Image (cartoon, rainbow, N blue to C red; front, side, top):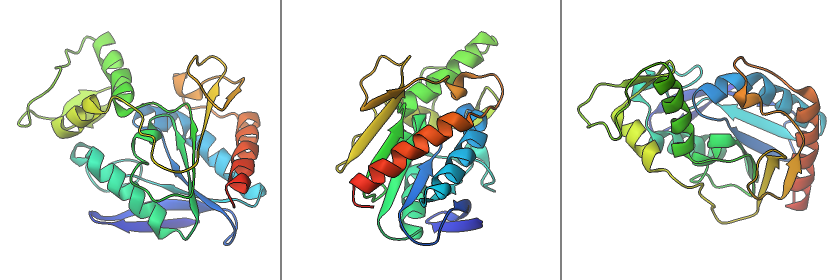
Length: 229
């Protein structure tokens, strides 16, 4: 179902999946190109959750996805505020699911619990774009001034305020409340569980992995049940 949510900056689109009652999760997508590479997988995950009687909401952030806000008007604080508003719009007892740099935007949301897949801070997401841009021969400033024009990084127009905020976002926030972290076996960082799968976010083109979606949906559903549904 196509839905929407309101936040202090206007109204944005949101997809809804699953039953109208019972537990619900709000999903924070990875930022920038990783969102494009994983969106089909995330939709498959939402449908797998619905088959397990877990509803989900997939909000577009301001300046991303179907948003009418120009990309270069996006700001990190606005992303966090918009995600928190989306979580507050969809009901009570909402749980969070964040993929990769989605963990950089879910900290302000009031959530019953958080489940994260291979979380990384905003600075790491930005470094991926910097690496791609430098490979193409583009010189990237360390800290552009506020009066500089937006930077074009791997096809993304990023205004200096967003660029600098992401540069300073060097650690994954760990808000209060239950938290479960899942990573791939190839990831040396600690996790509550590690799964054997290929990193879809590393592929050159968008991809999908229904088997991984089913495995993660089982883990998320079990986690929510442990946290009280």
